[in-house]
Amino acid sequence: MEKKIKLGIIGAGRIGRLHAENIVKNFVDVEVTSIADIYADSINEWAQDLGIKNVYTDYKNILKDHEIDAVMVCSSTNTHSIISIEAAQAGKHIFCEKPIDLDLSKIQSVLDSVEKAGVKFQVGFNRRFDHNFRTVRKIVEEGKVGDVHIVKVTSRDPQPPSLDYVKVSGGMFLDMTIHDFDMARYLTGSEVVEVYANAAVLVDPAIGEAGDIDTAIITLKFANGAIGVIDNSRKASYGYDQRVEVFGSKGCVTVSNDTPSSAVLSTEDGVYSEKPLYFFLERYKDSFITEMQEFFGSIRNDKQPSVSAIDGLKDAMVALAALKSVKEGRPVKLE
Image 1 (cartoon, rainbow, N blue to C red):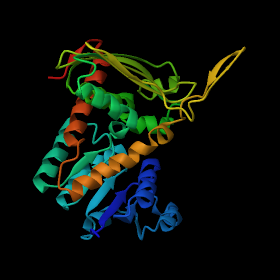
Image 2: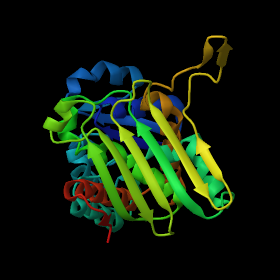
Image 3: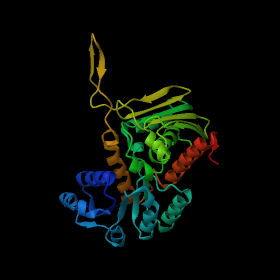
Image 4: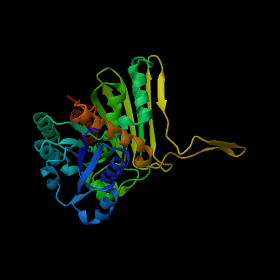
């Protein structure tokens, strides 16, 4: 049997806990030996139930542990880049949740540190590992829709985040829409060259007072000539709305929402089906496991992950261009 990959997790909020539980339950060749969180006292019992031996307040205890092969950075956004740089310097392979940082120069510093250390780095764009979107990508790669002309991404949350979260999130484009920018790049197989964004505060005035927006339409131009459109809302009353469409010279491929079942009831009163799966933990449940397969596989097989720090940089560039477009009321070229 191959030696187990020893893993440390930094940050035990919602996403850190999800990853820890998924890994313990699904990866017999990986051992989560340590977890660090500033509220360490509140996670002791949970960690013990999972068999995680070490619980720290200071994440640096994980980086100093020579037995640990890899770390997952699931802490608050403003710590991602500095922890990633320190982890690379400590010789650890790194999985980092998005965004790597809100500052492009800091993301570049992460890229430089990872390259210098020769470690693997994967960023958490889990939607690339969704079964539906992977199928769309395969169909596009195989040329079944021909030359891509239009890509549409609809992404609407079932409810807005708390105001405390909004204030530290970096804003909707860098927190939420960054997934959609990545998906548009992934599905077209091309890079964004121009962004034009219209945005508003239509869900909750308090979000606007906190300096953010909650509703947006973003149009994209791609290097291959394709055009894209993303529509976002922080609140869809009917649930988590996640749809894509790629239209090309030979055809069109679409993905509808995943629902708890595909049953449709038809009566004299109407036709009824179930609402979409409630939120990202339910809708993208399997993708979080598949992205971990990619990360651990890249370590075992000494190959680069398919979604790396360069993707984190490119997606952040698009997000910042969208933000500039809203502020200045004009299209913004990525160059």
